[in-house]
Amino acid sequence: LLAVGCEGMWGLLVLGTLLVALQHLPSAGGLPIEDTIDAAVQVRNRPHLMILLLGNSLSIAAFNSLGITITKMSSASYRMVLDSTRTLSVWAIGLAFGGETFHWMQVVGFSLLALGTMLYNEAVRLPCSGAYPSLDERREEEAQQQARRAPHTQLEARILDASPTAAVLKFDDLYSPHLSRWTTQMTK
Image (cartoon, rainbow, N blue to C red; front, side, top):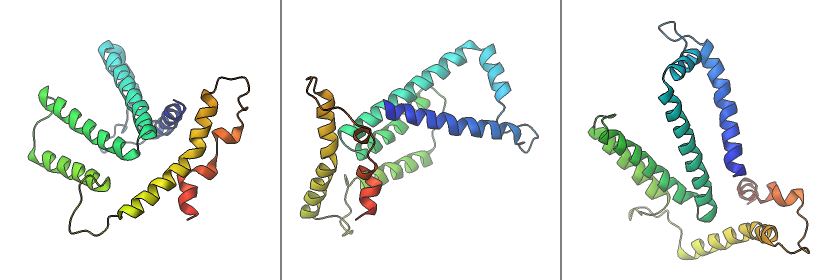
């Protein structure tokens, strides 16, 4: 939940800054690119827009929370696959309710997106490519991943341990940049 909150606060900060900037930049017609005042008036005049905005915010929060949980429990590859199914779901619902019109190029684009994701995650392999790791290389990579996860697994066990003799958590237990993927990859 901390990661979801940090992601949300970062997004709020960046998009809030962009919103102010876009409010003062004129478009080709002389109107601002983003008219915040007009948007607020529309929400005030049509209360169902506020319900839709709240529903959108809640769905994004749930999606991000579940995405982080999926990444933690399995891998970022599964999260990417689920993200492309979200795109397909939004497109299908838009078609079903008449909010979108069907274009065959959308099918081609989504197929390329899905194929790229599957190739990246090695769910589909191209026989003409020799770029795939051998079984020994895969086992070595899995062992390295387990070694990187070991300190976090020990930390989780300490947090879940309710006995009075449990070790006291230190700041380095919660924030350890020496265990991050970036640092690990940069030191290889």
